Length: 131
Image 1 (cartoon, rainbow, N blue to C red):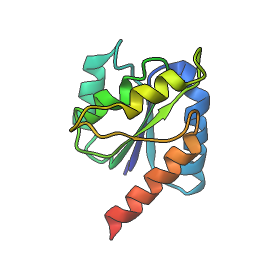
Image 2 (tube, helix red, strand yellow):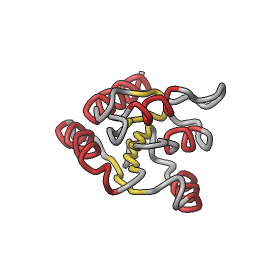
Image 3 (cartoon, rainbow, N blue to C red):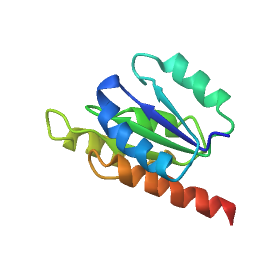
């Protein structure tokens, strides 16, 4: 049963996703890893979110405008953890995009390129859900 979805906005975000997946693998947490752009594949993203009932926490990894975590959070009640990816502005553009979500669209955000902390936060959320 998949507990965590790790969604990348682009294949270029793979190195950051690998950090998160390593933590999940070490702790034997089931996950589903997908590359789905909020800009290029919005219908695919909507379909995935609708069909992923077993997912309890979503890690969304994106750079540049970093719309992915906010788009996901606007379409689900599940916890969303955003991971900004460094780029031309050293990841500050992605970080600021993620932390400036409007009211009603909560996204928890970890540090730039910090896939490990995203996975560790997902584990804590899963632990809370068990109590």
